[in-house]
Image 1 (spheres, helix red, strand yellow):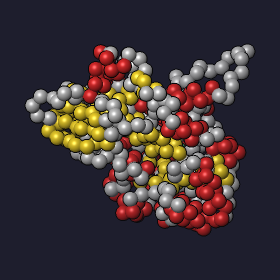
Image 2 (cartoon, helix red, strand yellow):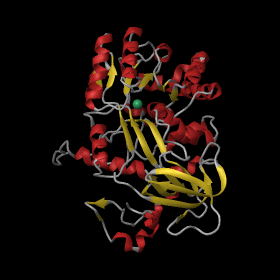
Image 3 (cartoon, helix red, strand yellow):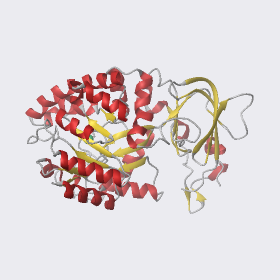
Image 4 (spheres, rainbow, N blue to C red):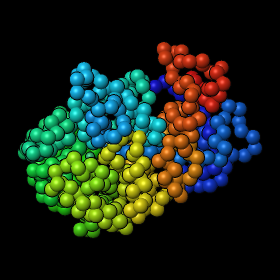
Length: 439
Ligand SMILES: [Zn+2]
């Protein structure tokens, strides 16, 4: 992206830090980075965007998403189901669904997404399109293929998995993902709750295997996200030094492990919604044994959420569900499960940034990236306001307005070959963007 110039966000009634601050604030964004936060005094400077007392908070970060053109678990999203006799749908239609997905994230205020496993490298293709400026979307971090021991899930998940056995093959599998374009590595330290023939209790890899994998990833400067359901696999993952534990529902059984996570800064991504999905929402579509298991796991996931909070573990928001754009349901569930509203918002912003190893994101402070939401209402006392896109007045990514009701019906100021699409800066529709001086 080219240089973005300066934008002044004037008269924010609340600025989301931790804890959020009330007052009248002015936030200056320069070249996509927060340059200055000050009290808003006197008259707004020329060209400032008047927030009229709305809340300013960091963009939401979802640390556990599966970016996919498969909309079967996203009711109401994407193309309607195919009918018998219709023309076959070419595989390439999927890329339009991915484009729609990127827009849905932005309109929901989700400005960064960590993809923890997809089919056919779809998230890497989407990331490429975003990098080239072909469309607007969230910042996207990809894992390439999930590294798993040879296991029944390999038959179900196909191109989402890279099966590997033995320490050297683990290293090779890591290197393959880096070659593929991975930003981080995802590993199955236990089996998956969604596979009948996998037992999610035992560790699915040996210590030697997981240790070699973590060593290889860290040696290359990347981070490891470990899928961990049962306690033995979670323990192994924590002892071998992974950076995030995904699901981690059994950790309440051994609070000592949660203390170790807090000490070492290992982030927990509880993914409560996925247990609701298997136990309730999509129960008719799953094998009954998996539904029964998910009901037990759902209770455990909430127990672990509370135990992790008490132990001081950094928590991150991971929706692990669909449709894209409904992500804030996970934040609401974390609050229903015992986090304060402010702690829930912190998990969905700074906590998720910690999970991604991106300290430049997730907070409003000088030097941080200007992924920002201007919200009608106060998510720091009621995060449910974020669940209604009508309350998202403006969404900025890297300091650039990309979504929000303030832009509705307005032509996005996307430069195409040096020209502004639409009526350009003279259009009254673009008055809001007048504060953005293009370099
Ligand atoms: Zn997942």
